[in-house]
Length: 139
Image 1 (cartoon, rainbow, N blue to C red):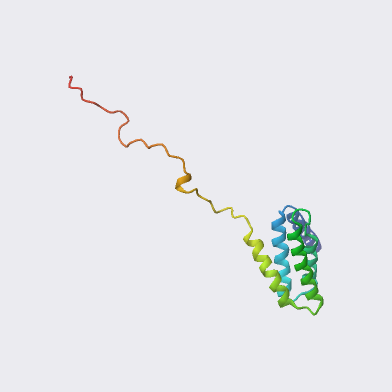
Image 2: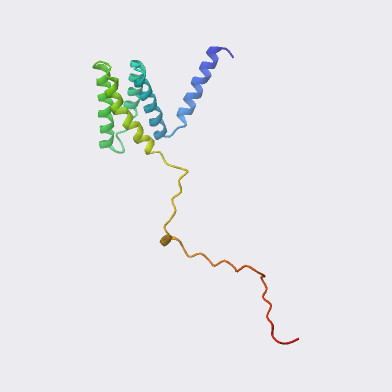
């Protein structure tokens, strides 16, 4: 497999992987890419990530929240156009990224009910023989 075929295969793998992600996972990925691009002071990649974030805003379910996200992304775009103000862009994107990470469901944490919520457990059998020998006095 030559280099161009490997790149093509890697691109296709990335597309398939992205298509199988949840919306929250996609947000975390794109925000991560945006933060990395802004940290590296890469104007084009930062702009592309912000465009993807703006396109991903869904006004159908929670329009007020969606409007807030859109305003933040538009502000990032303005800061980029006003002179590549990456430090200010990162002050917006990093807290958003942390919030999405904190919103990630924790599969490894189990919530245990309080003792009041637990049903009474049956008593354990006593240790020892299962048959009890009783001396009746008869031999």
